[in-house]
Length: 120
Image (cartoon, helix red, strand yellow):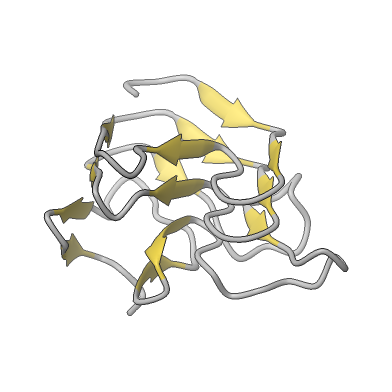
């Protein structure tokens, strides 16, 4: 992704805006653009990354933590309660970004290793 917007999407499980990869791999690279205003019921309000996939964010903005999807990506359980499972980006319960990752925040995940400005 080099530009543009991904907004206003809802996933019944993971990856409100983007579901990157599957059990056999895959990749998603973000160099620009905006991912905002998306909702997931399980994890990864903006982006959910498979543990076998490769993910890199070196530019652009992925919003997170806001209480309504018009102002940021969110993860809500079936009752609409805000859950902490990677509002911006989620790889698994141990690797996630709850808050907004702006243009200066680099995030990377590959082969089980995460580097950059993750929240945990």
